[in-house]
Every structure is written in structure tokens, then in C-alpha cells.
Length: 472
Ligand SMILES: Nc1ncnc2c1ncn2[C@@H]1O[C@H](COP(=O)(O)OP(=O)(O)O)[C@@H](O)[C@H]1O
Ligand SMILES: [Mg+2]
Image (cartoon, rainbow, N blue to C red):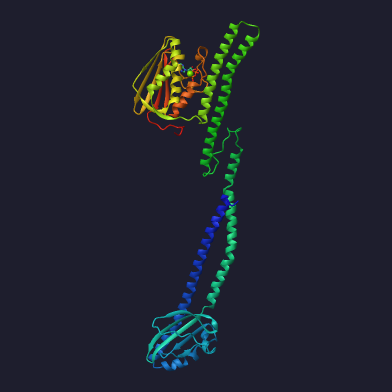
């Protein structure tokens, strides 16, 4: 649950949301506070200026002192109500309060005194009755000396407004938090539904229905690449599964023939008493067939080890000419048997490869060149080096391969029909050849003309780190 994308998304959203919400509310709170204080400042400034202007007019008429004495008594409105929250007072140059608004006089209170200042001096103070006040003080020059005018307004309402704003926000926050949390939970659930469907579909695929595919067209954009790669993987799996199946059935089929030959030899030989020479003959034939079976089994083993990558190559530097000489030594008896003449031409070419692997490759190719040759035919082998590649061309004067079959001969167990009657073989040699050569980073090419002969060319890179190498 804690590890689910849905849970993480919801948590992430709520964290971001909480920060955003708290930030926004703090910003609004301070803006509101600023604004209300500004309004209070404007109001008290007006009051002080009005008083100062009034006194200036009275001074010009020579009535400043009498006006100061009567000012309080003449005041009406909110300034005349006891502790109304709206106050003014005038302080003389020697620091005495000489005039107070009735709202102060009636409660016998005064505003806190401040040092004289010719510019407005704003401050938030505690006034009569412990009420917070916004107060401005400003000193003006008069003929009777400096007079400091002070005016103050209660901040009680402002503070109440701010506190109710805070309370509303605190009450709203958990509600919005929960609603948004649920909303995101539901929405991500909805968005992730296709992932669920997708994984359910993937879960239904087993080795029995590998041919099924995930629908790519209807998939959401984010899942499309996943569906495509999954389908590609399925395709490869399906192919390799069916290849394995095919290989198994071909292998069993191929081994059945020699087995039935052995069985029938045994049956026939044992059907009645025979001479020692007959038994010897039978056992020899059985032995030959067993040899053939061993050959097939060995090749099947090589192929399956190459498939499972348990056959590891040991790359070493070696001369293609040396390899060819070794191969020819091994094969010479069968060439002599058939009267085929083999010629080896070309310089020493050093490549990096697996000695056993490459010996297997060229043994197979030269063996075929003899097997599918005419009696007294020829095999020409040319080694050369060209642009970073070593090449070996094996040219025979044999029966040739029909066009359209030159690619198929590299398939496992594939044999051209014409060869079946003529020679024994498993059809596995060339498939091993191709796998080994490709593991070396090289390639095999074949050109053939029926009745005239076949040419195999093997290209091996001179210096290639090849796949499936054993660590030395
Ligand atoms: N040099 C060649 N000339 C004619 N046909 C060939 C030659 N090499 C291979 N082939 C054909 O390719 C088939 C596959 O060869 P290979 O895989 O070596 O199997 P095998 O030799 O056991 O039959 C052979 O059966 C044969 O029909
Ligand atoms: Mg062969």
C-alpha cells in the first residue's frame, strides 16, 4: 500500500497542496493586516492634520489659546463618547497634555506620550482600557511654542477581522485538505486503471498462449511503448519457443532412423542361427550406424550448448593457414577415398578467434565440398586478407545447390533433397558453422550453380572482441 504509485501521488499532492495553501493564506493574512493598518493610519493622520490646520487658522486670528481651551468642550461625534476608541490629545512644548478629546476626559485617561517629531510618528500602542490603538503623533511650530498633536483609533475591530479570517482559514483547511486528498485518490485510481488492465492482460499470457498480443491501439500514450516492447518480446519468445519445439522434434526424428536401422539389423541377425562372419558383418554395420548417431548427438549437444550460451569461446590469435592445414590433415582420407584433389593457396592471415570453433567451421565446409563433389573433383581453398577481414574461399566442383535453397541449407536439419540419397548427414553442420562464425563477428556467404559447383566464403574480422567469450 505505501509502495503504490497511487499512495505516493496522493501524499506528494497533499504536501505540495499544504505548502501552497499555507503560503497563500499567510500572504493574504499579512496583506489584509497591512491594508487595515494603512486605513487606520490615513484616518488618524487626517485627524491630526485637521486639528493642526484649525489651530493654524485660529493662530492667524490671534485666538489660538482661547481655541485650545474650548476645543475639547466643542468636540462632538465619536470623539465625544467615553472610551469610544477614537481619541486625540495635544501636548505642549514642556510636555504637558493641554487638550484631550472628551472620549479621554470622560474616562480620565490619556494617550501614551512620545518624543516630539516633525514628521508623522506612527505606532501601535496599548490605550485606555488595555485596547490596542493605532496612534500618530506630529509636532508643529506655533507662536506659543511647539505643539504635538496626537490622534489614535482602536485596532480592536481590525484585530477581530484578522482573527476571524484566521479562524475561517483554519476551519477550511482540513475540509479542503480531505476533499482534495479524496479527489486525487479517486482521480489517480481512475488514471491507473489502464495500468491494472494492462498488467492483468500481461498476467494472462503463459507459454500456452504466446501468440496473443497486447492491444496497442487503445493503450494510453504512456503505456504504448511498454505494450510495443512487450509484444516484441512476446514475438521473440514465441519464435524461440517454436524453434526449440521444432528442434526437439527434428532431432528425435533424425535419431529415429539410425535407431530403427540398428533394430532391424538386430532382428534380422537374431532371427536364425548364423555364421560367425555374418555376425561380424552385422555388428560392423551396427557400429557404423552407432557412429553416425554419435555424430548427430554430438552436434545436437554443440547446438544446444551454443543456444544456452554454455559453450564459451576462448579468443586467441591464430593463423588461418595453420587452421586450414590442420583441417586438411583430418579430412585427407575421405578426399583420397573419393579421388578429390584439394589445393590450398594464399598467405598467412592472423585473426583473433576460438581455435576449436574455427576448426569446426572449416572442417564442416571442406567436408561438404568433398561429400557433395563428383569423383575426381577439385576443391580450391584461397585465404586472403582485405580491409580488416580475413577470408577463406572454399570452391568445389560438385553437384551444386539449387537456387532458392542456398539460404535454407543453414537451417537446422535442412538437407537438399538431392543429397539425401547420395550421402549420409544430419543437416546440422552448416547451422553450427553460421552460429560460430556470427559469434566471431563474421559472416558466411554461398554461391552455387547446379551441376557445376559451390563456393563458400567465410569472413572473419582480424581483430574483434566476439560475443560469448570465455573470461581468461
Ligand atoms: N558444397 C556443397 N555442395 C552442394 N550441396 C551442399 C554443399 N554444402 C552443403 N550442401 C547442402 O546443404 C545441406 C546442409 O549441409 P550440412 O548442414 O553440412 O548438412 P549435412 O552435410 O549433414 O547434410 C546438405 O545436405 C547439402 O544438401
Ligand atoms: Mg555437412
